Length: 37
View 1 (tube, rainbow, N blue to C red):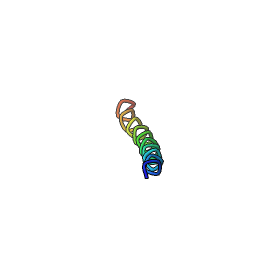
View 2: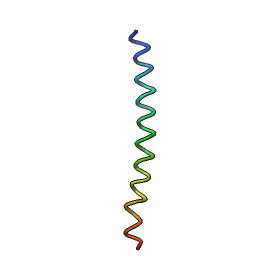
View 3: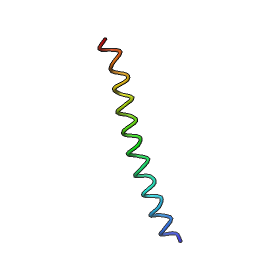
View 4: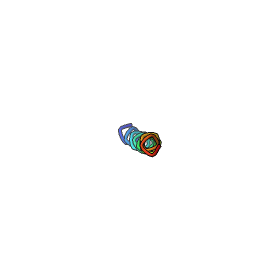
């Protein structure tokens, strides 16, 4: 039970980290656009 939970935890953390990187990239684009105008 513990090992399967650990695997699920790793998958969840990997997915949320990817989503965070994507959101960070979009946020960077939004922040850099007004400065260029």
